[in-house]
Length: 366
Image 1 (tube, rainbow, N blue to C red):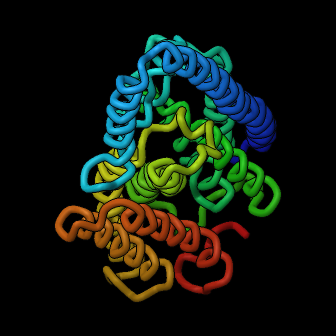
Image 2: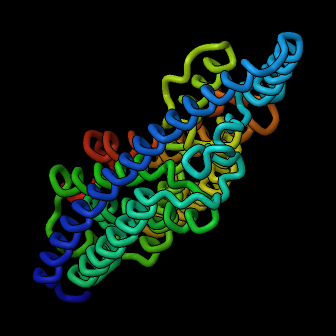
Image 3: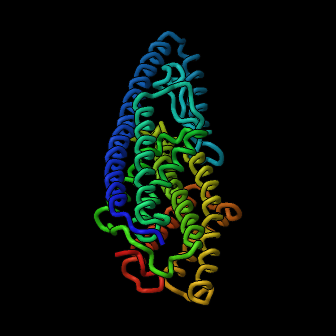
């Protein structure tokens, strides 16, 4: 067993504090990007409306009626989408005429030619925060002389880092900057909760955790939880976007202009489904490897311990989500709510179960 290095532990706490501060500035930058872009989009729409009104005044009455009908038909087809669902991109001609400021989110989530300065600043700050955060995780590991996920404090800090790292990696291929406020915000909450409610000094592991299975089992659980965090944010946005698109299709006003920077509900649902499928495979291995570790540590694969039961409950919820969406036609808001329920089970398993239920897994360091 490696000796405890309290100095490295202190450095780790300092890095965590600096990472939380950097993430906070990045969060503000992401929010600023949404607000600024929404304001620019509204200005472009007003200008386009003025131009359309001027053009309509110069068109004969009969032609104007026909053109207006055709325009309305095109608008309806853009908003309604297949099967009458408001899940198509809500891009407009005004956006293309107005340049970068008027561009809405691409359903394929590809990067456009437009490069928003606040978004670039936010991503750069997130990268800096992740680098500082990684230093905090590494120094915690060096201070403890082991992998840094032996208690709730370490699981939260490491899990927050993995969630941000996964977000940044996906950002290389897909334009998910609209998720920045949610992912970075959750990372801040996790770091604050770790420091205030679950802080644990650097120390050795209890005997039950002194196994190579800790690295295998918990690392996969952390990665799966990070992916579930992304899909939770996407599902929440999907519900908001779906409600907005239905309101627009019904002729209502667009009261959530910043959501034009977010892809349509169907695109969010499809990407969330793919990521949930990958995370579900990881959670399956988490359950399997946990059972193997339990057999080696306690002489049985399954003992109906509270933690084991809730790990299985999470697996059942996400299995039901994948099955219902793939074979039973549970799409749209129902699929989003199932995904959200699954993530709430993950949060419940980590917080309430760890703190208030006694069992063989009650070694969180509290």
